[in-house]
Length: 119
Image (cartoon, rainbow, N blue to C red; front, side, top):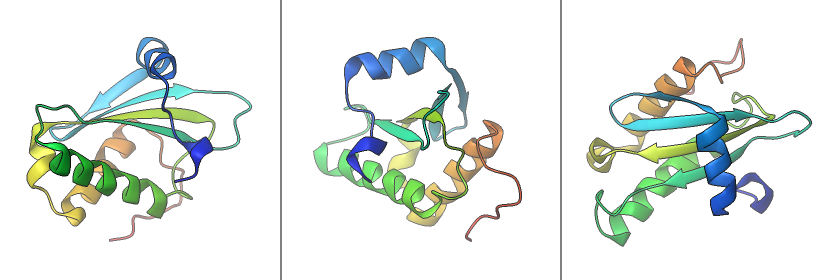
């Protein structure tokens, strides 16, 4: 992911949490904050130490990043997203992570119309 497509600073995370809305399933919570005039979407990831050690957390983050890179054209721009991984995400394969994230993105209505999932 490009640097400008990431949310890194604490105040940016707080703004998405406080001003945005959230949608969840068993594996992930996604916070969405619409941002007018921003041509692309930005993503912030939160994987708690409760999930596991550093290797486990980094694997989960890598799978989430891969999903957003693969589906960049399908996901609505002009928004900031914060994705929080829950404990069940640890034991999932990439295909399961992809299906779960696609599901939560559809619930949040951030998938652009007429774009199909790559299954």
